[in-house]
Image (cartoon, rainbow, N blue to C red; front, side, top):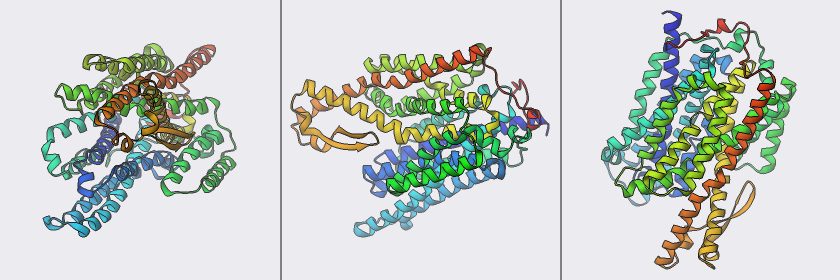
Length: 534
């Protein structure tokens, strides 16, 4: 096989692997969140359902970071096989859980059913954790592979690669709508379907020749790679990783901080570097970026679902529409970057995201909401892969560590910081609106809760249900309007990003313009300049 043909095979194999990851992610989310599927089959309440959903998220983010430390040691092929085995393991455990509550087709009842559901939940949880590890491993090997193959056009090809994520969401949404009653009757079909793209990427990559990472080919040592990320980068990543693990396993605050300090001290003792200042800045920017891109999805989907239902359309059209938009646009990132460079693209995206969120906060009616969502969707399309491209182009010595750690930081931020912060902002808006429109009501329907910034008050649906029906409707309508309006407050995140991007643009302008950093020996890693024939 020629070098060019092998590169085509490896790239599209990586693309299909990301589609697999995305489809596995969305199909499991559908199984967990649809009351007629796993919640009904396994007797899950809302708390249990969300805990099960979370069991597939934190391993995803953490494994991206941890595998980046060893990916060059174990090799891309071993990581690829591990991810495939994880998909098989997830499917096996999910089907095993089905068999526990449906033994030989017999219907269980009473205490026997409860015992079976409790055991099945353990299998589902284990399977979800394994699936998360597999998803994270895919991200850990595809990003450095593509950055190495296309070391002259990293931002362009990382954007094209990451078109696979919304592509998987589109496939998942369409299949779910098409299967309809079939999936409701037997949810196992959604597990079986994951095998299709998984087998395809295995076949594509099993005999492919993987490139040597450009960091390795250029003779950059492991210590030098870690030094690019540095002690400060390690501190950010360690805080998020061990904070998340502490939340999952119930560690005390003291234990969590002892582990964080020990991990950072060990990393620092070895790498002996605080890290590159721009790399640290990009890690910090990734926090509001991830919150803007991922943390607002649930709120925006909720706004768009009601008018869709009123129009007789399937709510998943929201997901299919926005994901298809992102997928198509990412294929054209190269032409845009060629004209305005990656930092210029990020500035434009931040402006569009700000405008889109403001528009969504006041939009009403199906057409206006979709128009505002389109504006916002275009804005957020390039944030993630372009940031990865900038990291790959400016810190090639950082190899897999800098490239994958910033992605892991983004994902962990959404769960630990961004998501809860957006929730608290929405609850504050709801409180203000209820106190203004329904004086004396908020005290009757609120409860105090705690998150990482302290205490906050939230609307308690149980207390709302105790009100008169007419009053319940008033509260629900007020809360809905307030939460939509709170999207205007969320613009603080892309505003922070915009300021940072303008600062970076001025920095590069003072240095003669944005230029990727190149390593000697990169060609030996398999990179092909201007390889636009894929």
